[in-house]
Length: 210
Image (cartoon, rainbow, N blue to C red; front, top):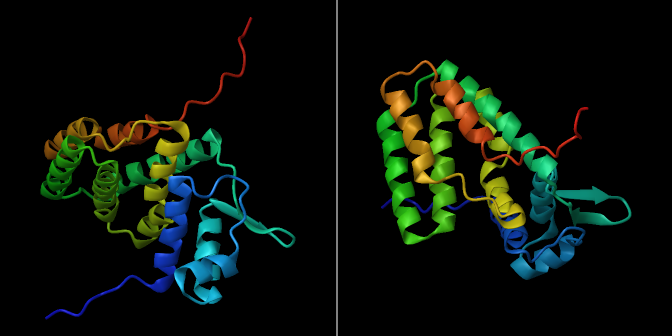
């Protein structure tokens, strides 16, 4: 029998806090008290502190000497910046390596099943898996690390909940990408870039020129 592999305690705590952000339990400005989270989850404060540091790096929470950790007020501009960086990283990944089309087809099939079943959580999970497959195919550990550090899955959930954006894991949006990789289309990277940016909030108009 294979040993059971459990996620590190820090990761489990981080996910619990993220679930609170996604569900709306934690609203912008709410304090997240280490001691209280530790008591609720039955753990010590040390791994809670580590998890909160990681969420601060994702710009989901902020901390100050006087107020401690609290939920940031996330804006459309925050989300747009994440998508802009992500689009550039994924386009670079395509220039470095061709993804396994069969693997992408499997994710596409799972996306179709999740869409048919109405499971938003599964749509997000398989959609992020689709894009992770493309980034991993580049074979560049630094690129992969930076992409993972964006917290793509977390930001996707938040964008849907906070800004009522349709999930960009829609299977139909991914079909043209798979077809482009199948025929080795030189425009695949640019298509992927545009695909990601299509779900970023548009910048507010700056005024009309006269």
